[in-house]
Every structure is written in structure tokens, then in C-alpha cells.
Length: 91
Image (cartoon, rainbow, N blue to C red):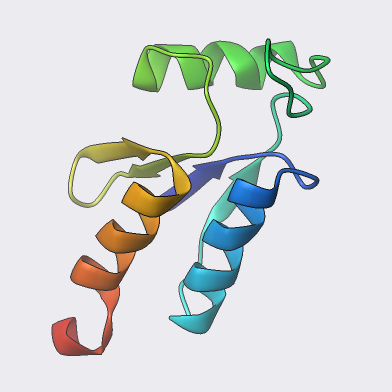
């Protein structure tokens, strides 16, 4: 199972969503807070706490891959990861 901690208005999160959609991936989305340089307004404290517990940082986007037991921050790293592990070559 893939989980994406993100914010709808975050351009980096949007890049990740688009890449995952192009690959036809199913994933669960969590919106812990709004984007911002110092962390935007918290939308869901429980989800924000989960984000910090899983990855150790209050940073979005964060992808959690439960199947592979991995997590990745940052749009470039996440996109590279899903392309390498879930792209056509893996099928």
C-alpha cells in the first residue's frame, strides 16, 4: 500500500500526484497541513503526528510504501522511486 502525505495546493505534491496517476498507481492521500516555509496551518493533528512518527520530520510530500517498508521525502526523490519500482519495467 502506498500513502502520500501532501497538501493539495503544494506544487511539489501536485508533481507527485501527477506522476503516480500517469503510472496508474492507487494510493491513499493524507492532508496533514497546508504548505508553507515554516509549516502551514494544521488541518489534521492526528495525521500530522502520524507523518512525524513515520518519517521523523514535518515535511511534505512524504511517500510511505508499506509493501517495501520504505519512505521518501521530496517530489524528485518520490517520483524517481515510483518510476523505478512501479514503472512499466516492473510489471
